[in-house]
Amino acid sequence: MTNPFSDVRMAAGYAAARPPVHPRVLALLHDWLAGRRHDVAVDVGCGAGLSTQPLRTLATTCVGFDPAEAMVRTARRLHPDLSFVAAAAEAMPFQTGSVDLLAAAGSLNYARDLEAVWPEARRVLAPGGCLAVYDFATARSFADGDGLESWFETFTTRHPYPAGQATPLSPSILAERARGFRVERGEDFAIPITLTPDFFVDYMLTETNVRDAVGRGAVVDDIRAWCGATIPGAFGQRARPVLFRGYLAVLRVSKA
Image (spheres, rainbow, N blue to C red):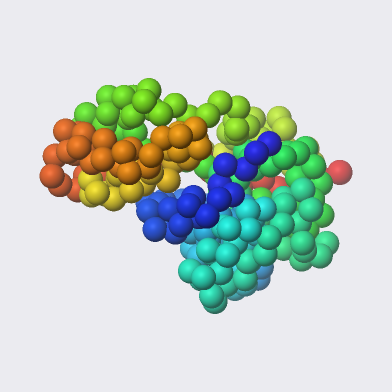
């Protein structure tokens, strides 16, 4: 499966214009784990490190890895106090039983061989460790009213998301597919994040449909101009809370 996040532009966009959803999800995970402090946490498919940094609230040592070298370089630049390596989830660069918490934020969907990830996760997890898997969709509705849904529909009609790049996952799918694991807890969430119109436009330009459109010849400045001209019709001229809907699941190694 092609990694849609492997180029330099995507890495730069992720560094500058992704909403702070990860800290909110990991705060929920912190509550689920009763505030337990882990020794070592590993961020699977860390991207630009936006999901790695807030793991520090859960563990003393945090390491991120990603198959996209551009993302790893960006993560190292943004978070010099954390460790990042280029690697794939199918071959995790960690010793057996050395990781207390594995966290995968919207990354397992893009694994080249998802079935090979489960035995690797079981191998690196320490006794009593857990795998936390979460993901959230692109924000497409306001928490305080209407208007964004129709804008988003027009935007994605102009620039459709590429088909077949991600494997759908959810707590129920993980319960079926995560061989050797059991889902201890899995729930959907809807997290409001207040964004300005300008930031929302920058955020939209980091989406894979824009990357795909540019790859087919569209000009990113033209996409930005259209977004900038039309988004005030949805937002007005003020910051508004947009909803990020997703799921969080905690998995434990099944007893033999």
